[in-house]
Image (tube, rainbow, N blue to C red):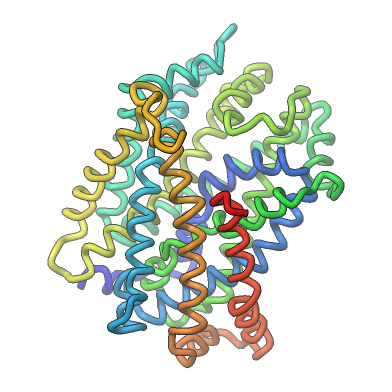
Length: 447
């Protein structure tokens, strides 16, 4: 079976690919915005704590399920819990990734279009109206559908090449470049006049600004930011050799994610404060505020291009993992080739993504429950399906999966004592489910 014989060529390849899956829209676009509206430094500190208490244990859990079964998402639950309803956790992940890609690739298309436009002299122009430009891009059916198609095409080409030659090779190039670009942007941001006010806002905790809503935001962001809940990491870890430590690998991915979130804040908030803008500018920060700011800087075209290419890479590496779980599920029986399934999946996702792509133009007035197709799909995936996926995985690994396999995978290839294992089990059995339920009740509007 093709999906079962694929393997990562190295531990580094697995870690970079897993980090790439985790580092995407949430870390670079959503995180600075949510931090801006939720109190700055205090929110960032709470986010880091929750990432270690929730995100890390959940990531370890998905890694254990994946390598412990040696199967992709659906087959993993079927093997570990035969003749049971738990296979639906894997199916939920596949459906969730499909729906997520249907609007995620729309945003990816916007980023691609802006990246092309950011070629020096093309995007930043004297007297440019950036809110109007953003409206023209998102409001044009031709532009949005073209962006969606190109973004998906890149994903299909990479996934069709396989784990080592596609996903791993792409991440080995894209992730280091992403970090280098981040360092350049942070250095430039910190050299601006008034930059330290932005650093102070981002890193100096002011707990007077923290609300219960901000705490719940931080809770949600802590596992949204690590790509857990849809069993993407189950599929990725099913390709992992037994000579790699799962806790150490998960720790590396979490560290890189926190590092990128830190750098995103240091790249954006000094710029925002230097130009007297509000830190809570909203999701339009990337496409409206930053072009306006970079237009006033020496070599602004270059730095805006770097930022957009960085963002494009991060968006792509996350999308790879979403498409891979779908392709792996349909190639698990060995009856269909990876290339054929990749192209068919890409075509179906493209068709499904068209309504979301048109949500700011031809279908702007078409709404269900007061939301456009884009917003409704986003709500369903992020606020309903993802928390439920995390909750089901937490219950599965603690109450259904063989605890001997769990323990064996946790201690495989590492010299850890019993203490970390006991702490992880306590968190997964009691703390994580309770906090996930709180997030679900909050994001679904019940609480």
